[in-house]
Image 1 (cartoon, rainbow, N blue to C red):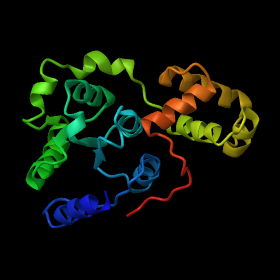
Image 2: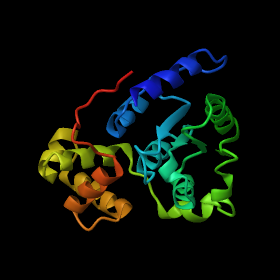
Image 3: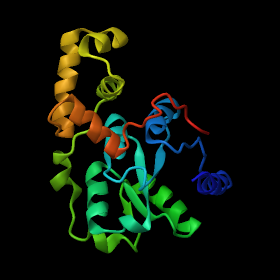
Image 4: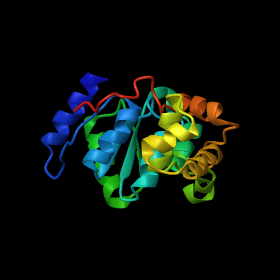
Amino acid sequence: MPLYREGVAAVVRRTPGLHWLGATGHPHSAVRLHERLRPDVLLIDSVLDPQGQLATLLAGNDPALVVVSLVREPHRTAKYVRAALSAGVHGLVPRAGEIGEVLQAIVRAHAERVYVDPTLAPLAAGFTPTAEAGSRRSLSRREYEVLQLIADGLENQAVAGELYVSVETVRTHVKNILRKLRARDRTHAVSLAYQAGLLTSGTNAHPAG
């Protein structure tokens, strides 16, 4: 929500030691925004990334990035919290919490690499991310680009032409995409990506600051 983003931005800007780089309301644009700005910490609304696919993609391609999930009420469940931690989320804080709690999540997640708000901590009790993280593998930046082109209706030959790589290289990327998304075929992979919010109908959307 633009109003919420503007509110968080205003508070971050006036907090010593923190700097606001930008914001967007679309998962697809978030990938491009991250690539351009390379932030230290990224806040993601749980509604935009309910299955953790966006967090997995971004954290997988930028090991230094700290991802903090703003958890909405419907996602205050053990299932979501555990899935988020498994996906590579470093911090979790209720979206409806006080702004001071959100700031604390940003600072502590960045400093400690793992922070779960006390109100959400019971949902993560006994969970060890390393035990489950291996089951979720992120798409590389190139695989994500291939998936976007497949979603646009391009066949392997056309994808190869767009990316200036060989058709065999594209086939390898497609195989990796299917394996990582646990998809049956290309169509299923695209469907899963849309469901997870990795792809949107506005594939040419620009980041909103």
